[in-house]
Every structure is written in structure tokens, then in C-alpha cells.
Image 1 (cartoon, rainbow, N blue to C red):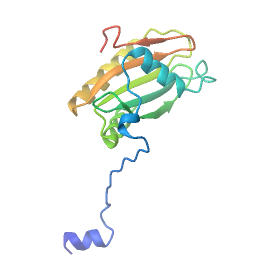
Image 2 (spheres, helix red, strand yellow; image 1 turned 30 degrees about the vertical axis):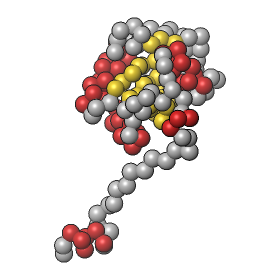
Image 3 (cartoon, rainbow, N blue to C red; image 1 turned 90 degrees about the vertical axis):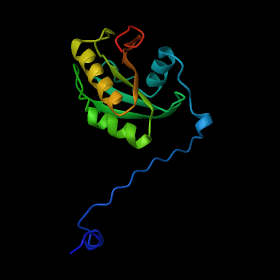
Image 4 (cartoon, helix red, strand yellow; image 1 turned 135 degrees about the horizontal axis):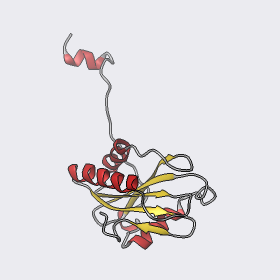
Length: 155
């Protein structure tokens, strides 16, 4: 059997990458600062759960910092949620994103990042850098406010 016969007989999976958007590039919201970014994240957050459980979302942007989409990455417990960096980057590549920002909630109301939050940010930044993307920010959302790791010099 040769390679063409294997493909025709369904022995090798075909992979396709598709990104479809109904929003024209010029009509996409452009992010200019962390306050606006936090506001956009908050607008897609389930406000009823922000003090109940940690959640994590990722915003993907093009070169002009216009939003391509926001991905609901995970929802966890009261003290943590899983952030799979492979999933973060898989979605970024599928969207052909140039930049990304991550946000997660702190049900405790404490906006300060933990050492685990700082380590995760460092790992995502390294992974994004490796594939030519920029991590713009890691936002921590609470009921009453937010914390921008970029504004505080942690990125």
C-alpha cells in the first residue's frame, strides 16, 4: 500500500484549520489599556459566580490589538482553576492571533497575584514568545476591581 491509498482508505486523519468571523476587521474592538481590557473581560464574565469560583478566560488579538475572540478556558473551585497552556496556544494559533491576554477571577476579593499566578504568567509568556506571540497582560478580576500584571511590571 502506498501513502495515497492509506489516505484514501481513511487510515490517516485529515487536519483542517478554520477561523470564521462575522465581524469585519475594522469593526473589532481595539484594546488600548488594561482598564479597557478588564472591562471587556468583565462584560463576558458570569458576575453571579465571580465570588463563588475561579474562572479563566483568554482574549486573542491581532497586530492592531483588535479582539479576535475570547475563550472560556476553565472554571474551577473556590481556590483555583486549571490553566492548560497547550489549550491557550492552540486557540491562539487557530485564530492566527498576534497577541493574547489572560484573566482569571479571585473569589476571595484579593486582587494581588499569588506566586502560582506569577509563575503561570511567566510560563505563558515564554510559550507565547516561543511561537512569536505577545502576552499583553494577566488580569485578576474580583467583584470590586482588577489587578493588571502588565501595569505592575510583572510582564
